[in-house]
Image (cartoon, rainbow, N blue to C red):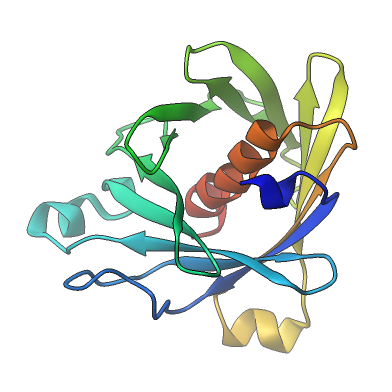
Length: 195
């Protein structure tokens, strides 16, 4: 994940299919992560088999994602467990160790998320005012750590495709772990709010 260390902004484009899925698995939701200059960095794709239980749970079903570098090496695994009320996303290393957790928090006036490390310690919070629906602000202990913005395309393109694009901006002093967790947070935010 060292590729994230020197970047201050990422573009994340939702795609329909991803060709690099593991054999026997059907990709559904996928994202292409690029630098602001357009260089492809990562592919994030939903992987897993369809099931009757998953169909019945719909959006609340378990989701597995793989974050792969452009050279196809595995960077991170993302797991969204099944949920009834509050969704979360577990970020795992390629070997299966916990890297961090992103959780949605219940709030009446704002959409709130919490980013925690593997020990459960809070690293940052993500907040969106309900009346400003396209901007999520990331706040760490020492100030603003970044922004997640859903980009609006032309009306025709919005209506023709259900795919969303995001711009993820980092503060200069944001660490590599936090940047990787913010990329994962975009996946959870898209699944919760825009799918």
